[in-house]
Length: 74
Image (cartoon, rainbow, N blue to C red; front, side, top):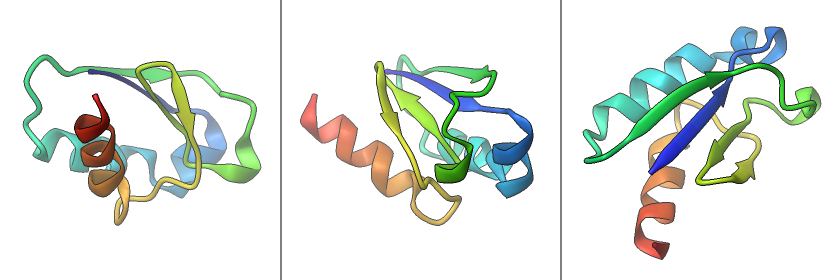
């Protein structure tokens, strides 16, 4: 699984680093976790990309549920 997390100003201020910490807590095998520059959807942040699919409105509270859903679908 490849996850890119927006580290642009807006997403950073909304808590992108806390999202990173929550993803790391999942201990996913073969996880490739990257920071990224702005995805251009600042109003919808925090934004992450999971295996090429953009997901918006991510928060530290819902990120683990979102990632688990992607894992079940693959």
